[in-house]
Image 1 (cartoon, rainbow, N blue to C red):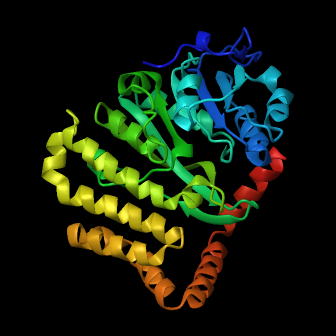
Image 2 (image 1 turned 90 degrees about the vertical axis):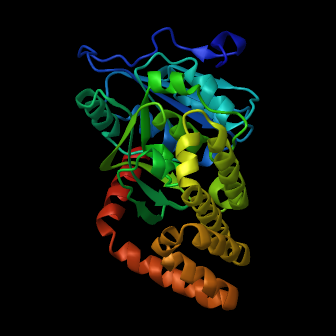
Length: 350
């Protein structure tokens, strides 16, 4: 049961969708931004939502009682928001659940305060859902950058199904959108998860309906030392194993779990290894890579470059760092088009 808005002190406009001269015949897209102590990035996230060329937009910002100037940033845009709040909450999942409990749109999505959307994404999402009434969730590609706005990678995905998600094929949360009914049927976010809370939701949606992939760039995600994906790298694997245990008993997933148990556990070990490696915990990562290989060798072999780098990290950390920098530079040279897109987007949002 999601919380009712009446339980919270909330600043909300009486008209929750944006006002345009043209009639609003398109479905309303409802976006929530959860935030806590993210003043350095929050304004970019807000502007990336408000600058979309989409008429029927509902937008709520849920701040967890920040004291770093975030509230002043939100107030700067409050006349363009459907509503906002700044008070202590139970974490990211709680803030998002709270936000969506206020929403009336047909399509939902959330953008964390250190990520942002690319322009025209909402129109593309609405068009896709209009032409695919059988799809409950759609995801696109994501640019990744560091805390200083330097491009790191382009995260391209594939057409995944429920089994892929169960084996921990991860999709980029900032570029995920889903129908309101899918959110309601899945029951929202589980407050007991803090790191793979999004993947838990995708599994519940995919077990009840259809998901789809669009090979288009829709959002940007930041990876930096203080970000959850780096600062708490070891916690992601722990939640992956918890998710595997949950799948074992879930009424909609347990049959597939029994059939794919080795692949699922191999995927959990692989995800743990990948995060540990990115978190500079090379020896622990190698142990998990070995466990993953014993269960699901194909998954580890797909990631052979990261495995080789992790091996080098244990033997010669400085050489590994130098090699990583060279590989990154080469990759970025091949992604000049994406860098140009990113530069243009940041210019537009400044």
